[in-house]
Structures are given as C-alpha cells and as structure tokens.
Image (tube, rainbow, N blue to C red; front, top):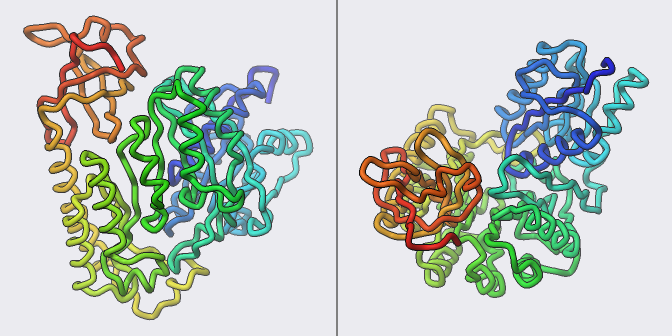
Length: 452
C-alpha cells in the first residue's frame, strides 16, 4: 500500500448475526484510517465473513474468497466466520489467503491484517472455540441510516441439534454483560437510532452463564433506556418463552414480531432432530402470544427433507404452518453437515424430494404472508421510514410489514415534511390502504397526527 488512504471491502455470507459482526469489523477498519469501498471494486484489503450452515454456504464462501483474489491479487485477503472456524484447512488450501480468523479474536482483525502487511507472513488465528468462555464484544457501528441498529448480546449454542454445525462453529453459550448492553443501547439511542435489534446465535439462552434470563435484560433495557422507541427481539426457541418473557414482550416498546423456529411439524422428525419441544408445544406458544398480542407477527424456520421424513411428516409441517397462521417462513432443504449425527443417518432423501417440498412449502408461505398482511388494510399504524426512491418512502411497521408511502400524490400532497430527506428514520403514522402483488402495503401518512 502507498501513502494514500488504504481501502477495505467487506462481504457477508449467512445470518443477521454475521452481518452485524461485519459492520463492526468495518467500523474498526474505519477507525484505523481505512476507507470502505464496494466489494466489487479494487481494494487494499478484502474481509470475507463466511457461513457454514449448509454445503452451499461453504461453496459460496470459497467462491467469494476466490473472487476477492481475482479483483486484486496484491490485496490482503482476510477470511473469518463460521466456515473459517470449522474448515480452516479448506481455507488454508486456497492460495492467496493471508489472514484466517475463526469466530473469536475478531476484535483483533485489523491488528492481524496490519501484522501481515509488515511481516508478509500468513496469519492464522483459528483456535478451539469450545474452550472460549468469554463473550467477545464488538462495537455496534453507526451506519448512514439511523433506522435500526443491532446489538449482539449472545454467542454460541449448547443444544447440539443432530443436523446443526453451529455449536461446533460458535462454541458454548457466552452472554454479553447486562451493563454493557445497556451502555451500548444508550449510545445508539443518543445517536438517533429508532430501533434496536437484539441478536445472538441462541438468543433465548442469554444469561445462562450469568445467572440471568433474557426477560431480565429486556425489562432492564425498557426501564433504563426510556428514550428507545422500539426494541426488537430476534429468534427465540418455543420452549424458551417463559412466563416472565411472555409478560415483558407485551410492553409497547417491544416489536410485536416474534421469530420462533418450528423446523418440522412432525414429532417423530423433531425427536430425530434433537429438538427440545414437540408440535403441540410450538402451537401452544403461538396461541399464547396471540392471546396476549392479537396482531403479533409470528415467523418461523422449517427444514424439509430431513432424513426419514415421510410425505405424512411433511404434510404435518404444512398443517402446522397453516394452523398457526404464520406471517412469514424461511424454508430450507436439509443439508448434511460433516461431523453432525444427521449426516450419517442412512435414510437420506433424494434431492428431488427435498426441492419438491421446498417449492410446495414456499407456496404455502407466500399465501400465509399475504393473508397476514391483508388483515392490516384499512388500519392505521406507525411506520419507520427507511429509504426514499422516486415518489415513495419505504419503511416497516413494528411487526415488520413493508410499507410504501407516497410523498406526492395526484390530487393531494402527503405530509410536506416527507419531501425532506431529513424525514428518513422518522416514525410516521400511516393509514394502510392497499396490498400490492408483492405483499408490500401502500399507505398514506396522516397529516392530522404527529409523528410517534
């Protein structure tokens, strides 16, 4: 690198936790004087945050590493994340990779990159993640938009479901201290963020190593950061909705959107998956939440084509999704991960069966998503403005329905303040008027009401 400002580019594969970690890493590079550039541009440093949840994730991780090497063969290429943690030998085998960091030591990644620049030697910092007992704090970083920011409050998983590689990639449960979470939330609110999203690998296990519970943290956040307009809780397992948690999520500041993994509607499949609940447990939790918060959006994850899954098992999954009127659904075909028990199950299903079931369940998911969104036509709800394009603002309600809001209309003008770019990241009351074909809602801002 010359005397000019060095540049760094970043690429994330996988989940929202990964995305938040990448943003934190990018912020650390910025603090050290690097300019962030698009990943497809020539850069002095490329950082690839990898994923290993499926075999396709592994392949995409390798492809992205090789793309960085082609973009600038002289760049420093740093690889981190879950694939780097579980398959470091495969990453090391890619010629041109300079720095390898697993799912720990990310707080040192800039230091490690600069160590390579000075010494010219490959840097390898992949250790035994199972031995890591302390939560690694990475700073939440202010982005261009102040709509929402994520705070990672937990890492690791102790469940070891038979299909899942993540406990091997992330290690045991480690929780961020309550005081640190509160401090970070206060900082973000002071910077103008309207919503904080709490994320983690096994969020419902938060506090298991601190003699605390997730409900304790939520209650303390609401009490000690009263200026926070919205608080969003990430994915929580069905068996982890305690009475205390059910009480806290009724607070107005908590977004009425809850992601609860189902994985299968068949008890026999759930048992073979090593899940800690059964179909009725899932249905009971959804019913309880709906009794407390009638308009709540419940979304879920499902794996189809698990070894031994029969057509009857699959149909039970369909029935469960319909019976619980899910607002959204992520559908994945089973992907055997080397080293997990399910990878060695002898009753693996053909890829054609998996893909057929994915297609069928995705069609069900689309119908359910539309049915849920339709129930809000004619209602007035607060929308967080996020992007301005053409004559529309787009944003999300607190239950994560996407809304388009015109700031200029044919016969009348919407809120004049919406013409102003400063309206971004504001909370605006909107009457939802129509559901578009892509399940986005079209709404009109209310001039007679003040912003929330």
